[in-house]
Image (cartoon, rainbow, N blue to C red; front, side):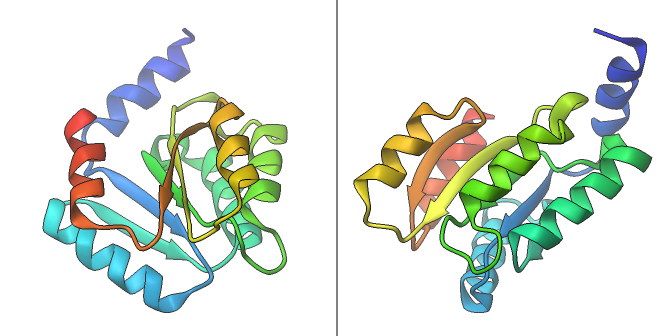
Amino acid sequence: MHFSSVLVVMIAKNRPTSIYVIDDEPLDNIIFKMLIKRVDGEIDVDAINNGHNAICKLVQISETEPERLPDYIFLDVNMPGMNGWQFLSEYERLKIGQFKKTHIYILSSSLYHEDYMKSQSNPLIEDFINKPINLENLKTIFKAA
């Protein structure tokens, strides 16, 4: 581990847990934020409405303040423009997570078995969670952390 990586980890410990929810549905984002606040009111949640905007934000943060990269990303699969799978390809190609491990969860209403199987074979993805997410799912995720 490089000195800069150690420094990033140490700095990151002094801030609240941060989450990006990347989803094009405003109502889903509102519900997600409400549920997260019920799990832990100190968690910082940033809703981003599409994959392209999320990549741009992550690139900027990784170049200037990598300690501020999110601890968790909850990613919708089906979005216009850059979908969840395209987001993951770009995230990996740009090596955004090289200084910090971000736990990525697919959050989707997709009924396609292929999406589930694709998520299970992708090493960047922790798990596939069906929408609508519920409080128990979130408690389980954060209890394991």
